[in-house]
Length: 392
Image (cartoon, rainbow, N blue to C red; front, side, top):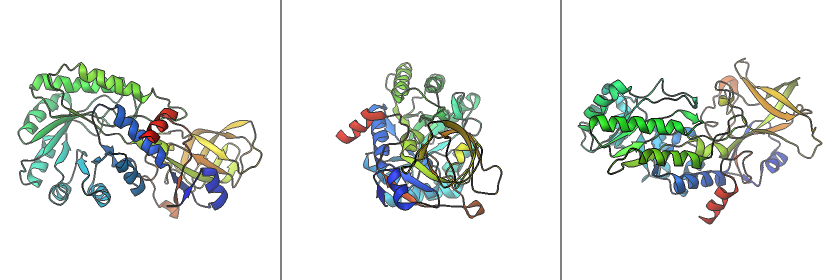
């Protein structure tokens, strides 16, 4: 992978016609180290967030060797790089073929479920294996999340007690898990989720081997500035202490966005300006999906290439290159007022989901990926995290 000191150098040398994606390994390392130093348990990286081989290698190099996977393809991606890495199949709805292949071909023992039917599938597809680690996922409030996952996954309270008791009979080790939703903006959500776990433990009198608090840890965007991750970790620790268990189960989390978001950015070029509308060469069918449907506002900056830039800032909407009118990103994206055709813009915080959501719709697709060594446009970690990484 070709490397540049910064985005400006990349644009100056390449003058790319197609969108260009940038990876910052230092950013991944700093975020991963922050979790390892401060989270009170085991970290499973959520592969769906960014499965690029260089990203996975970098995460492994930091010492994280446990992965949350949702498909056979993700298992293959991990095992190709690190055969000894542990994969946990945490998607609660899987085909029988996938369960069988995961268990017998890739030695996957850890599975998640939220229904009796899924439990039966796992038991039958593994030929009644006696070495399974099974996680019962419960439904919790996603009220503070930007993207709600509670409607699709999780056993309701009325079902969770019986399902947990039943699963216990078939598991060598058993866990309880929840997910507060993607980009969770308040740590109180974890307190509520851990409280639900405590209720199930109290009612069933079954102490799980694991408590998995899921993902949802936030990153920073121009219009979404969360509390520090330290606040989240402290809230989680306090909530676990409040369970008042004689022996605390092993604690697990599944971060994705918070580890890789800052590491990625996309460089786009302006094809046309219509007043406050910018038509750019990437969009919602490319790396910018999240700017469309959930309307996440990415940090943006004009790459000047030495020309004079207006001090007046203007709010712009973006339109992608396809012929579909849904290829629209409301923003607001704040950029200099004199931006024009052929100018380059860097959009940040695209390490999470930027690569995974790309399609080839209308024939627009770019797989031009480079490494850069500059810092992200915005950061949750700052100088201290980077210093800690350099020392480590």
